[in-house]
Length: 398
Length: 147
Image (cartoon, rainbow over all chains, first blue to last red; front, side):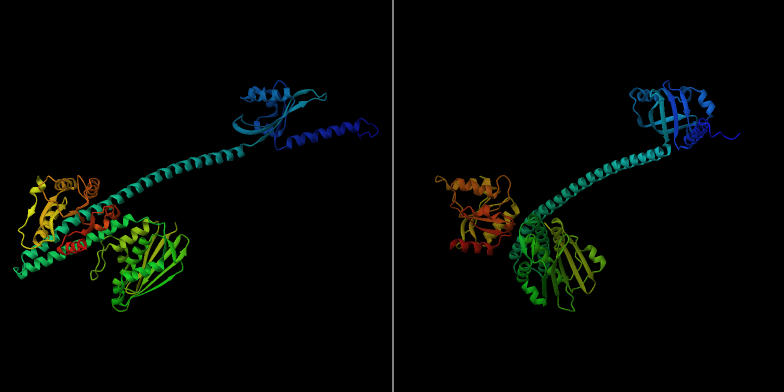
């Protein structure tokens, strides 16, 4: 039968039906679980997404009470009652929901459901499954927690290591002080007996004057030589202890040109006898460093450069200074004997002498290193055997 | 007293530089040696020794007492580092007791390490000798003292 267009009741009825189906379809297509419960917490209606979530048939869902469907139904009822009583929506309820055969994390918005008269008859709920999101979030939180724990652990370890390092540092300082004290005491206590031995040798010589055999004379000479060598060593040791006293005199401004000139005067005969030339080029001529320390550094390096000159050429010593990030770099370059890598390694050890043909006790470079390092700087050596040696000294900015 | 017994007197053959030297040092070998040099080189007629400042002060105090038979030294050779009473303390007690008429020469193994300011403030400290003690060193001092 053709629809009767003259009957005004027919068309709206069909339209209504078709709209209802459309809404139902939309309702089922929504990518969220939508369901309606009455005031007694009984499920009235739901969409396909809700049914899928519950994994049972529509009939089964409708035949069961909420308490049968959800173990935590009472908890949800509390939320529902709140919405009903306040007539206000309750949004963003995030909770773990036990559904048949699974546990899901849902984000639910609950709004009051009214009838045509505006009376509240229940609750309309829309739930989004955020289980995956929650898993990722939990993993992230777990990772963050792990990181935080690792970080704490690391911090703890760093603290512990720093404490250990500080302790070692203190220990090293104490050992260093003990060593300095030992050198001081040893050099002082050794000086008096050696003075006495020297005096007694003099007396013995006087007593035996003219009555010694050649052999006895040689014994006396050898005793004198040994005493002199002993004395020289003590003098060098005392230089180290003397150095300790002015290691930190860093308040004054020192003129490098003046320091070099003073040293040149002091060792003028050595310079003259060897034909040595000292060339200076100071980009930074004034430095904040103790004058005694600078002179001690330069004196040792210059005299070393002359002592260890090449027999093939006259010594030329180039001394320069320039500004670098950490302070002032002082360089002393010579054209002397040079060093092998092995010799370089042994250079700064106390009493280590590399060349026996040259006078010395092996204390000079040890003193230089101690001064530089005690003032926060460092010393490096670069060399080519048989050609040249350069000492680079970083004088730390104060 | 021990230190008086410790006095060495020599047969005077010719004019000595000093009449009586008081040697104050705790190093007995050093004292023995210095004393030998003094006697052999005719530096002094007599050498008294004290092993520390306290002993030395007793000698100096006793000889300055008018009733005493002991002669005062005309030179004190004084070490600085000594037990009981060190050289500086000896100088301080002499100063405090107005015993400033005997010239003192500091005799030590390390003149360069003495705090000179600490010793030059005493008017009776005349000079310094670095050990070992020698005839030449004391001669130089003597000529300075005589000037």
